[in-house]
Image (cartoon, rainbow, N blue to C red; front, side, top):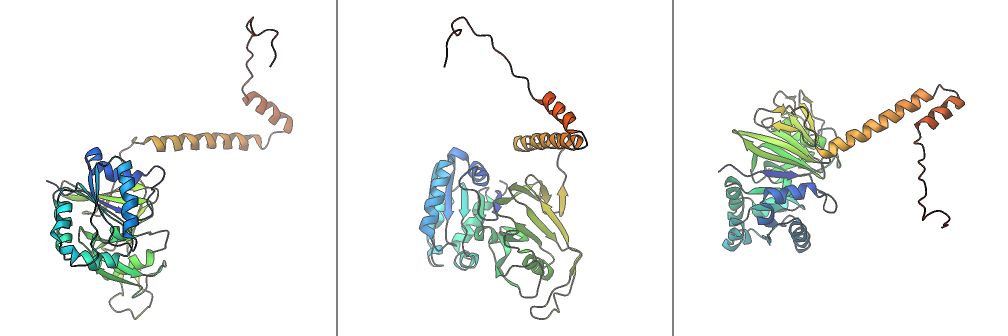
Length: 329
């Protein structure tokens, strides 16, 4: 059986309106047959997090939602928690503190069970901290900024579900370009994935290749440092890093990228979803109106009035029926 999908969510996913990402997760987990395990360990308000996602996933059609909430490494050795994961069709890790999540889970039997579930086809999703921990090298903490600087962030071991990349979240909203560049400058064998809020990088294996697909309102930014020239190995504390030759890809909703070959997958021509079609139609109307306004700009006021009069629909008159004649409102 092929490995299950990974859903790497940049945080702040829509929970109130269309809920596109969470709906996709429930559907991928089996829809009405979905049995979802929620791991809130990264959060300091675990019970509240469980209540929110329990209500959301059930409303979206999941058959069952269970909490798997270890609060220590000792609890992460509990066979009863592993048993809860054994029957899950989807696993969801919440946001919070990714270093806490790593410290309590990584290297425990519960972490091993998550990896085993992924290998047997279970969907593993995580938002914010739950996204970061999916990579082998995890952003532990660090400051914002567009310029990479030595020691501006710290890396810890992640769960290793995605070994080809390092993941950062809330990417554009919190200006985390510099710290992701710092990491790939120091570890150029890795791709850097920066995932925006209310956006998911969905990774599936197709014919032996890891294929990333973007879902949501924002973008997934990929840094490919395969040909980087850098001074990261000799730069002094807090100094600006040289990072030349890094290839950047900014991928919006619907874009696909081959993480194995590090290449963009061209989109088939003519495949436009309903939302895109509506947006294009509205844009077309706006452009036509703009063209009319521009054309009218050089016309005299009287000519413009005549043109507007011709463009307005003529009122239709309806002959009254015999019963309506002589009546008043």
